[in-house]
Image 1 (cartoon, rainbow over the protein chains, first blue to last red):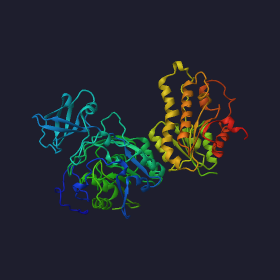
Image 2: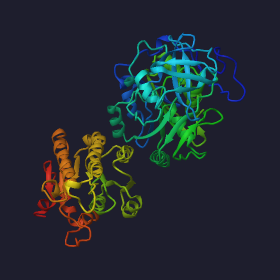
Image 3: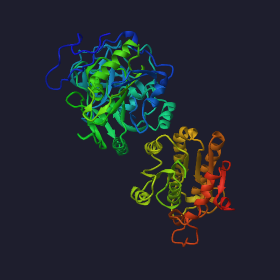
Image 4: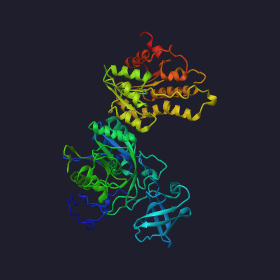
Length: 367
Length: 228
């Protein structure tokens, strides 16, 4: 275990230039045995680390979430569904390949895709103009990009209909089997007809009807928004992809009323944080809205409205950790990650959970 | 005086508003909702202990908001919001099915969905009560009242089954009888309904359900008022 420090040994030199991402303070090495390689027996049976600033960490179960919050707090959840966004195909030279559809681009008619080898490695030798052959006679032409490509998917009708027939959930090498799509969908998932998330908004996965009942009983509110998330396979220093979001008026009203009454806004996941902060003005007031967001939270753009986070355990990758630090402060995030590795918390979409509750002070968030 | 918390749907006017005022006068904290925000705020602005929450009970997010507004305590849930359907009331022969779906959505499905959300809170309360608003059209066959009547009959049955499944709760289907309300006027467009009693005359019957805690069941206001 490497505790939090400013100059980690791993990774490359600090990225610079336009579009580059800052570096998170929190660093750690993830022992392979802590990667959750299959769904847990029960969703809400996973562990929950409750991390409050200047307070001892609590090692609890996810079913303890209601007790860890206060009456008047508001949880904001992502209702984005999960698409079966991975498809087997062949490259022009006959080599087998797996296509991951990240989602539509702001330009109508094209999609962002990523190519992977059948054993899960990144494909780095794709070329503009290359055509990948997929089931049902569907061809995908790579237009521009390098590892993640803007591409044209030559399918008649809706890409989702085709994916429903030939696709499966995107999975990475840490998983043992192939969990069905139902395992990836959260209890909040609402199909909308638009292309939803390429990968599950997995912070919401441990929620069950029993946990929701407990939250209502505790006097904790639940508000909904949508953020359709793309593939998560960013490399260090890569800026998060633009994503589609929608914050309904009722949610904006609930968030603003909660803050006015002294309650806390607890985002379930980094996706919710990104959407809420996108529609938060500098004074922390949230406005209903929808569109594409390219917001990147970090030292230059701290969180304005999100007071706490329910989140899974993320890989040591900059953008997620920067976002966590922008809400909870580097010290608290660092403490939580050190303890999670020491105590054997499980990582990734089927792993354990964390509640980060920084203390709000008049001067701002604790460091 | 009580320290109870109640949710009353359809509280912007008519019986819902009158009941909200009466409950607030007893010291009950009332979460009052209605679709028309201006009317709801205007109607409840002078009532202490009333939280006005404008919204549509057929919206799942709004139901969530309603339950949250209780801050985790709920003693009384009143499903007063209902949908009459087209005015004048059409015969079943030509009843527009899309309208009937909307009537059922508001009158039956929304109350069930709200009850589902509120059950953990109600189960935790000392003396929890759920009341659905019924009508004689739920049990009698009146020409033109098929859509509204079948919805209210379904709501009655929902209350009856809920009472069996949740013995800790009192679950009542409350039939207030005809009242001089906007909904009643819509049922009889252009007719004089000034002979119907005001909603305020029915409220004492409703309060008996809370004070006497009779067994769960279907109760007519006229019967409850006997002896008062």
